[in-house]
Image (tube, one colour):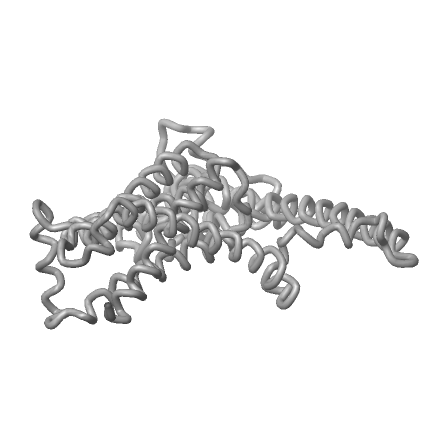
Length: 332
């Protein structure tokens, strides 16, 4: 027999890919798989790559590869169709298996459930592949009881070999060649233990820790000062953003900041008489203030209102030493 090279590659690649998924589930179940995410990504990428490459290569020996999708419709009677359906369905739990491993860890219940489903569908796909050859009556060498267990065994064995190869690759080979890319690889961390420190290294480490602690203390004190300063001068920001009673209180605080001592909040003193917001006594007379946060241009009636308040206070005092100030926070 001289089978097409694409069929040989397909059988080998997909068997190894599905076997690797089974090995990932088995070793995660035992808690023996590396916890490093670089290994996880590398292992799942290798499995997906082998499976996808193998499935694509299986179409190359067809007369019309573009019609390969039609084979999926004969799953009731064709092992080839069942293999394709099982292969496609395996990608769903396999993707969730990877996600739960990275998100919840290899020992979580979600990783176990998706991993078990992935392993079952992976073995089912290899089973379907083997049954394609078992069902070929014209080839007695394949139509026997050994074909199925040999296919399953080789898939699991190649997947396990590939799994251990990837462990060696990500735990030893790659970290030793490119340690900057694998800074959290723990196999060689013992060399950084103080028991193996270089001359003066322990003293320098203690000095570094002291400097770090002093820096953290100084930074904490600085942040406290910054927060206190922000609270102290928050009213300056509020002048630009506040409205209503909050804006009035902010203007009152602002006047106090500039040493105006005789400032009266008229909304608090006479809550039933809603006229000017503030009154300020100063040597030249009386200042009445109206503060508004209108979020735009004031209307004519808003501008004229403060003039009415000034006129009323002048009549009450029987004096012309009353001045008016209209504060508008129009850009809030």
